[in-house]
Amino acid sequence: MRTFKALGALLSYPESELVDAIDEIAGAIDEEGLLRGRERRGLDGLLAHLRGTDLLVLQEDYVALFDRTRSLSLNLYEHLYAESRERGQAMAELAMVYRLNGFEIDARELPDHLPLLCEFLSLIALKPARAILADAVTVIEALRQRLARRNSPYAAALAALASLADQAADTELLAALAKAVPVNESSLEAIDAAWAEAPVTFGPDAEPGGCGSARADTASATPDEGRERT
Image 1 (cartoon, rainbow, N blue to C red):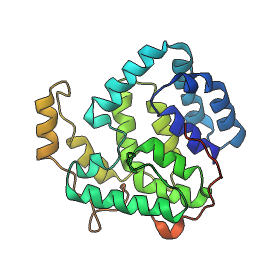
Image 2: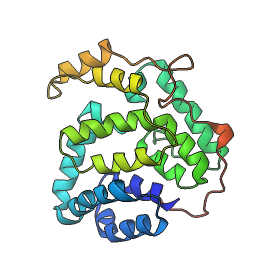
Image 3: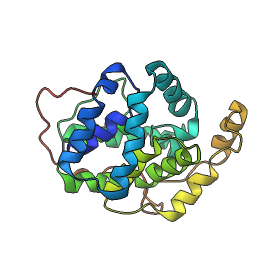
């Protein structure tokens, strides 16, 4: 599933290697044909942005969006559990799904990091990949909406990912995630207060449709030997 790997690359920190590979990434997406219509056309803006913007500007913008704006973090479980103990448990379960499918990650990598999840999904069959992605689709849709409000071209990559899940976002969880966003994200105090006071409850007893434990019983894969990470 090269499309998942391509989308994960587009959501990764932009290095010169990524910019040089933009045409190859676009070609891989088009050749596989999983994305069509509006979702595929929407990626053209992001591809053009990455292709035509100075690398240092791309890197500064990426850090400002995804590293310095907590509500845009690409660490999915942060939006559900913040810094609670439940997040650690959820990440351990997701890491176990990776290992059961022969996908080993570096100890420094967070299993809930979206580009890493995309790489994993690229190594398994489409049906289980779509099922696992469904567990994350509500957070992905929340991120898409937040990026769209900022007119960020990265919103298109989130829209493309969401379209590949085998179910739509859960509206109740999506509303809860919207309430967790601080009004003034430029204030570190406001961010910390919002996340401390408005955690999103999620777990075995919560509503379906969120980024819960990935379903190990549905995933099976034989990862490609000698794969390289983007």
